[in-house]
Amino acid sequence: MGQVVHTSHIRIVREQGPTRRAVIEGLPGEIRYGVHGGIKDFYKVEPKEEHPATLDHMIGAIAG
Image (cartoon, rainbow, N blue to C red; front, side, top):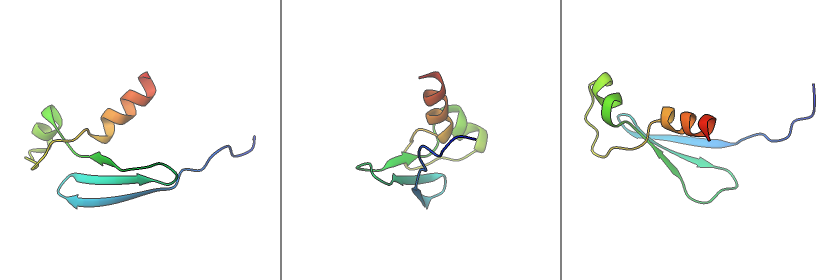
């Protein structure tokens, strides 16, 4: 195995229902996660605000 290039340190805080915020060590600001569209329909939830789901970020990173 090679050497470790980077270890991510991320703090995730659940706010309410499916809404969470993540803070990535070394980067400014925070990332909001939640549900929207078909995802909220699938889970039968109605959040106060819609936010990208973790799945959206994963697809964006992979497809990037």
